[in-house]
Length: 316
Ligand SMILES: C[S@@+](CC[C@H](N)C(=O)[O-])C[C@H]1O[C@@H](n2cnc3c(N)ncnc32)[C@H](O)[C@@H]1O
Image (cartoon, rainbow, N blue to C red; front, side):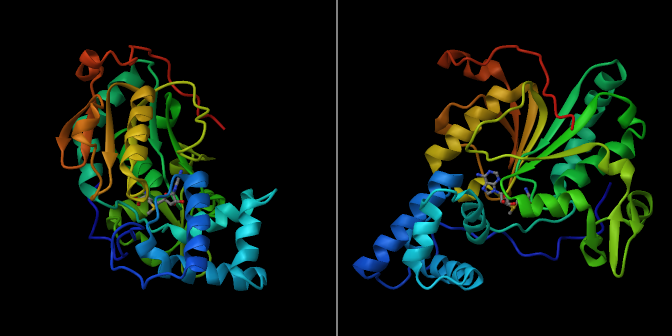
């Protein structure tokens, strides 16, 4: 499907780089370090002191929402027992959930033209096909993928083709599962796509049709944590989340992706993200932000990427 236009939404906010904040007092620096360490531990986020003004401002809002008196109280909360829920709010405050239907639409065009035909042939022959939107935010990326699949393969649901969509943030996952969006957010779809895959909902909202939703399973998953999937993926979208991780963390993530990729799988990264060429990761670059998993590319490194063919179970 060709999107009707560019996303009206702003690009993701980085947590590294940018204009330096004013020098921090020792007390403020200690508070910043405690928050940064917690964000790293919880989600792998790499936050530099230059971003301290943004960090304190966003956490100030959480403090007020929680009715806490001081930043030290907040730090005690995110480091204390039962901190999981507030840590999630912290990660949400420090990252952006910005996304849109058919964002960076060249990936969907590449997927539709270069990758999907082979996957359809495999599914029609009784094989398994698994796609993963690995930082899916409120679901538009996964639903866009499902729409592309259905446009070329309307009977997809009758075959073993599924899309796993995961994120660390329960709140965005709830929005994704609800599958209802303000009408202006579906502007990137063509008129034909809107007719085919959306229906009117309450007020000024539209809902994604059940046919599209049926292909997607939403799950809570921290990219830094355990991945319970048992098999391999044919396509992974990991877009606009690696920007939050430092280089060693990005490299580890990419090598974990390699462990769950089927040979020939395609990995799509966000517009400012790349695989570090020095990392030796077994991916061949085929576009600016598009990479193909080639186990042979790592053979000289004696890395444990075998020809294991099992596919992940992402059924609800
Ligand atoms: C800017 S959105 C990207 C959405 C979509 N991939 C896109 O490009 O439009 C970044 C998402 O990454 C998620 N995220 C941040 N850290 C994460 C982690 N450690 N594991 C999984 N998701 C994470 C955030 O919750 C957020 O929804």
